[in-house]
Length: 443
View (cartoon, one colour):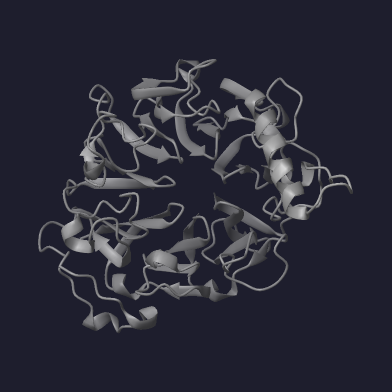
């Protein structure tokens, strides 16, 4: 089956094929993928898209069980959890993030396979970063696998890799319900609202955990101007980067989960990690951010390191982070917290229109193209964004390269566009990897 390249992604929904639909029970689900296929994160065989090729529209992933209940997208790999509590993985495996034999043939990485080593764990949900994967058991235990020199595994000092899933013993008894993973840092939310962080902690991206906060040597605003004697700006920049890399050999790392000091008195409702920043939403509606602010992704005028309040005039309900941009589903401050008048608010990096709006990048503002659509969840990639609505429709915007928007082309979209290929289907989850996207559809 060859993928069609739809012009501008505007083919009428009634003419779209439904080859992936079945006439079976409505409880069955299908996982679909689109975007960059170079790392195998789409889970599609070469007979469908060609070896390492891209998919420009949502395409069903063969080989997965029909009872997937949730999906997760890492930078270049993907995860699926079934109703039986099994985890399936596919995509990049250079760091062992698929939880399978690290010597398995590279050409098989794009094939979904069940993660080994979790047979005694009934998994509720899974999460992924660029280099590791994580799963939460029905007992609230947290399991991790992969490789991270930045301490993202959280297994103890100096432990940088594990081929098979290991339990984070430090969090035993904490009843973890959600994890978010950035580039070397991690946040874990417990059912009682307590928050834990670990990994690379420069720039206060996980707040303060028993140590003084440090500026990252790779943070652009921390690189000092070079002397006049250097021959060019390019040489100066190269020298600065090399110096920063040398400094990173002594990286500030928290090797095991710890409680975040700034939030001790607060109960947390949601967390989201971008590449090098974090968002923390508290149950009282307060939204905090920490980490790099190179692109304005912290959404605040306060320049202090650590977790500080975001300057937002809306009531956040849930949050998400792309590589360098931030997203939130919000109620207007004048609305009832249980009302249906929701909107998407965005801020941060906007080079490819991933904010879905015009206006200041560093100030949280409403994405007007989704007003009236009742968004319920959002997800951000490297340079694209996704929103799922109460009508179970999917909207996408930002960078369209490799087909990551699912609109049938590689064109960028400056405002949200309905993914028409999915019209008539119930989309129950949508997540963005760096350059690919996954949707879970009920049949």
